[in-house]
Length: 202
Image 1 (cartoon, rainbow, N blue to C red):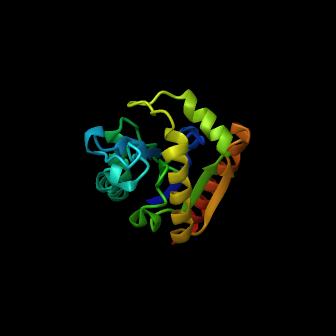
Image 2: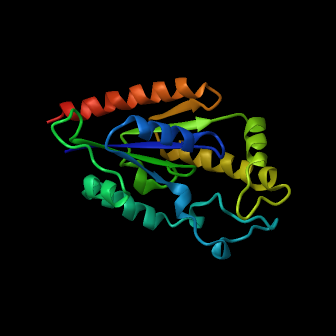
């Protein structure tokens, strides 16, 4: 059995979840672990000196639980798929022995324990003004307070990105403004090449 782990990171509202979902739909025996599902309860997320909740920090996430789930997939991808209601493709169909995990999130490359697991790393970026416009059009629970984007979200993105670039190499940066089908096609082809290399290894 061969496995591939793909990391899709990026800034808030950059399109990482959309790309991950569409990629998963293209690849048999694949599934997604999304970092957003591991946020701690709002009551334990600290507040900074400006009164802003510090969500854009690894301490706001149950990263230990996320790692447990990823390691569970690594031990038995087939069982992991079944637990999520996904039926593994059965032999002798082509690719039935290949399993792909897509790890998606805004801080997935800032967690050192994860970085050694990725076979491919992608990071989606969009300009400040587009990011701010998209963020303001979404409804969060709890909702963003006034000034949250400029006072916390964007500065934390710049801080986290600088940290990421200092500890991670081999990231493929993607233009989040690129047409969605083209973006999917380029990443899909790249992942397929990685899968093929894994199949060719002894």
